[in-house]
Amino acid sequence: MLKVSEVYEKQIRTHKERADGTEYVSFQKVYDTRECLLNTRYVVSVQPYEFTASSSEPKLHGRFPEGTKFSSFVLDGHSFRSSEMIVVGSFDKFCSLLKKNQK
Image (cartoon, rainbow, N blue to C red; front, top):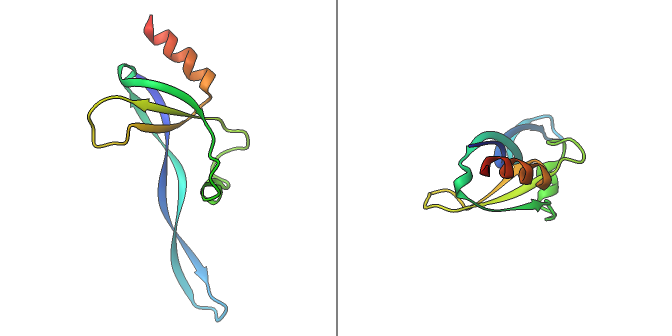
């Protein structure tokens, strides 16, 4: 098993104020992480990942330190979850961890 920090979309509530002084609640989506245990037998591939879409920028703003590296795991298996998982960590880090788990 491999412990990873999965990146997922989380909806947060923000309180804003109108020009007339009244407050209202708005919701926005941001990226956050959650700890996961990953069965290495289901890993099909690992690739470096970058959030390149312009819609990702506001979701990432202030959520991760500058220079944070991400990787994409493609998983095999019949599950209700998506087969792709974005995690925090460099490609090189996961290459070395997966090599250690094979031995």
